[in-house]
Image (tube, rainbow, N blue to C red):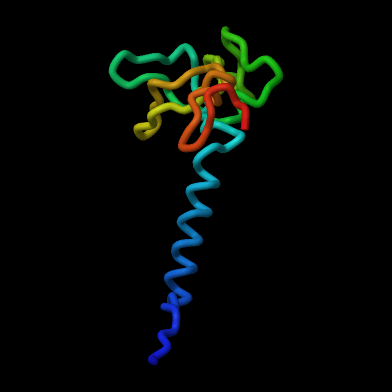
Length: 118
């Protein structure tokens, strides 16, 4: 009687399979939705909101409207920056997202429940 050994997988196959499973687990239900800092006053029907530097969104209440003087004495328009979640990004423009972080988290991904429960 001939004894057959169980098939052995190559280590590269095991590593690649494991990496794929890990990547799916990490991207499927992240705790922080994708976000971009946008100027709320810049909406364009064909492009969406203009993406601006994240410093415009890092203030406690965001930048206010109006004008401010720069150190050179020129007047520049302030940016009404706010975080925009789960948007489609095209270059320096973002559209089809939401300003609500909780709504973006509720959209979920692969393996996520809509209610946030596990």
